[in-house]
Image 1 (tube, rainbow, N blue to C red):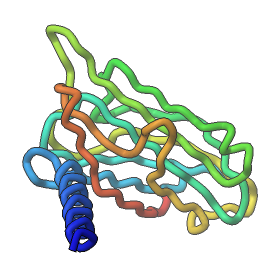
Image 2: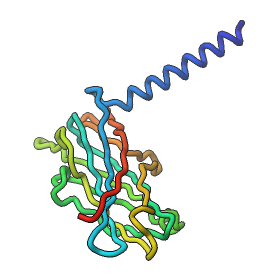
Image 3: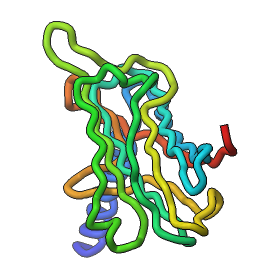
Length: 185
């Protein structure tokens, strides 16, 4: 009897933790935000644009976008990141960071993008809406094709996964993730 009661309590605790985890992943208005990453060819051979787009229904003060970009046809190199004409162009902190240790292993690229609005009397947040966040530019060895490149969300230590946060720094938003490929512009 004690064993059954213990098992029942354990199952209930796990269920409560799972429900709490699912609730924590939804934003305050109940709609799931969307992060869409689009891979586009550029005019240069063996050169691509990785466009990060975001749809949100609440103002966001900070965001982090760790991405894993890889190809089974050859090595990739991280070139740069642009925030021109983006929804976060005026944010105070915009830091793209390449995990070069991972890149040297030849398994692809891990690029983490951290963003923070600004605080003070004129705090700056990203308003609800949808559109461009940033463009990462990458290049690849000969043989790498658009079809061979995959982009996925990833986890980068110590605790970075794709998410946004509201200005209270307590409410985190975990968006749905989608990857698409597009042709030349």
